[in-house]
Image 1 (spheres, rainbow, N blue to C red):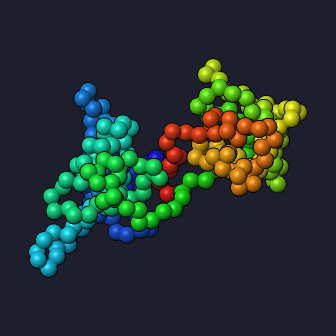
Image 2: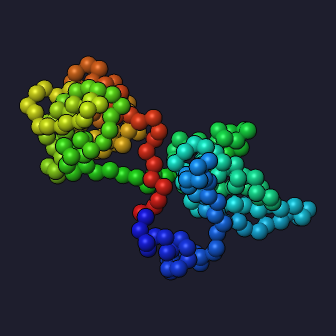
Image 3: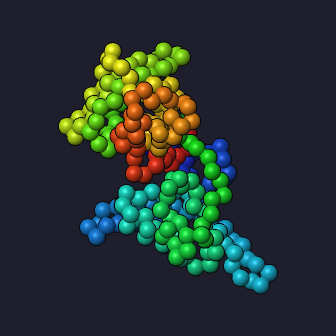
Length: 226
C-alpha cells in the first residue's frame, strides 16, 4: 500500500467516497511484542424503541498474519459494549471467522463478488514464479487467441525449484489461457474444468495430477478493491 492509500485512510487526503470519519483501531501483538494484526472499524449510533442499543460496527480493515491474531481481533470487536451487529467488510471466501463464533450460523454472507483476476501474458515466467504443493511433471498445451501466452510447455516442479520450458512432447492437458489463469492462483480444479469441457485431458489422470500441484490449502483473496 502506497503513501496515497494510507493518507486517504487516515483522512489527510481527499477521497471520492463518503466524508472521512475517525475510526477505531485495534492492534494485536505477539508475546514478544511483534505486531501481528490490525483491525480498523467504525460504529454508528442506533437505539431501539425500548431504548436498547442497536449499534453496528463496520470493519474497514482486518488483516492478521497469524491465526491467534485473527481470532483475538474478531473476539475483540464482537465483544465491544452496545454493539449488536458486526459487518465484517470484504473477507476471504473461506474466512475462518464464522467458526470462531459459538454458533457459525450467526454469520451470514450479504454480498458476494470477486475482485481478483489473472490474465497470464508470459507462461514460462508465470509458472516458474509460483510455488507448488508437490513434485511432478506436466506438459501443457496452452491456447491464446492473442498469441501472448500460447505454446506447449513442460512444467517440472520439485522442492529444489521449478522449471517451465517449451517442448514438442505430447500434451497432458490442452487448455485456453483463461483456464490457465483460473488454475494459476490455486482455487479452481482441473478435474472440474475437464468435467465442464473447458480443458482436455489427453493423459488419463493428468487433471488430478494438476490439482495435486496447483491447488492451495487456502483460497486466493485480495483484501483491497482496485
